Length: 73
Image (cartoon, rainbow, N blue to C red; front, side, top):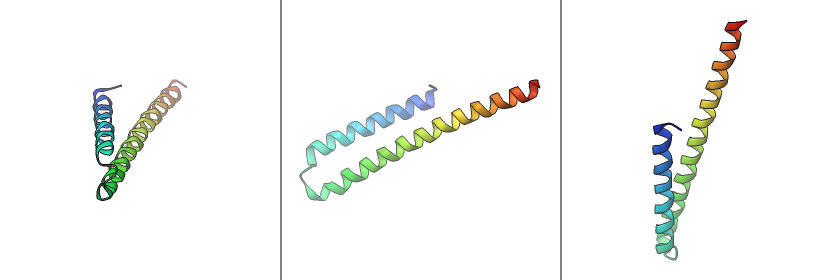
């Protein structure tokens, strides 16, 4: 993993920890329920974004390898 991915994963871990801490404290207060849900949605979006980045990297590697094979022929 490169430095950018490590930073992203550290931030994601921080967001999850914050959500869990916040959720344990204020779960029973109705006005904070939407804040908990928003935090959860943010985490899911971050995970999706990370997966999309990983898929793009794999795609780029495959295209690069295909181009190398094409050039050899």
